[in-house]
Length: 369
Ligand SMILES: [Zn+2]
Image (cartoon, rainbow, N blue to C red; front, side, top):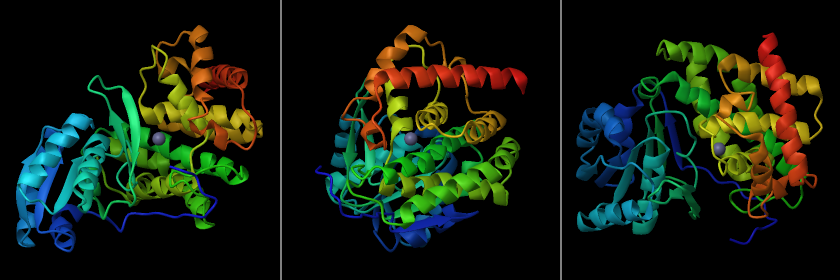
């Protein structure tokens, strides 16, 4: 898609969050459809199915089909589910689960030109509210992003469901969400930067990132502790909202920059075992070094990451051969990726050196705390 200099802001039509929200799913779905195709993974649907069925029943919405076999957002899966939707005359698609389920639901809905609702059951990603899906190959390699003309019609977040997932999922989600503000600031400073909506940010978009970062740094640690005990506290709720709504709105309407580009570069080399959000958290520090930020400011972020359990060294990302970092740095600077959104020219050599600088800084920090 051609990038525009127009300011563009996009968001889900409805975002609903609160304890017991799942029991109100029917009331919200009833406004957008009467014949639902529900899809997701086995675990996600096993913990939600009864309540989803009851709630839809109460709002006189039929479940025309329910598929709990979604494991990857691939074209064969999307085609198969679209066929089911067409055959069963679905008029609304509901994706229940993690990133894969909601990405698949959005793709099926787009293919059938139907409204879509995303019901997350964990908080490792912020895929729910955005107007794009990540598509993988059958071998689980990244294939491409699919961009849609509009965001989901409904995102429904029930914290009582999200806390049943392992606490570390939300910590990963915090790592990904931490990128939002730092990458947004870079995009604002680069007049040629393009958002994920292929435009420029309105004034509010980077401010959403500012609030997101404030919430993470202020409430993230307590939320991580509460999540270990599976408690829904105001801290936990604030962090869920920061990941599911704020980071998504900010990233989509402002843009991504070095942190995500370096993340993508690192996924090309072998030995990287960490999750998306963990890698992004490390790469946020790399971006800050590239930006020549005050070391005290970087150490504040590093300290927070260390405290909540996010990686600050290469060793924490997996078994990485430093000789491969040149390849990762080259990939990170691929013109098709988002490095070009940085306000200064970044070369692969700069990226490699910044990665190694963060690694030794993080190791030093790790050993002394
Ligand atoms: Zn991300």
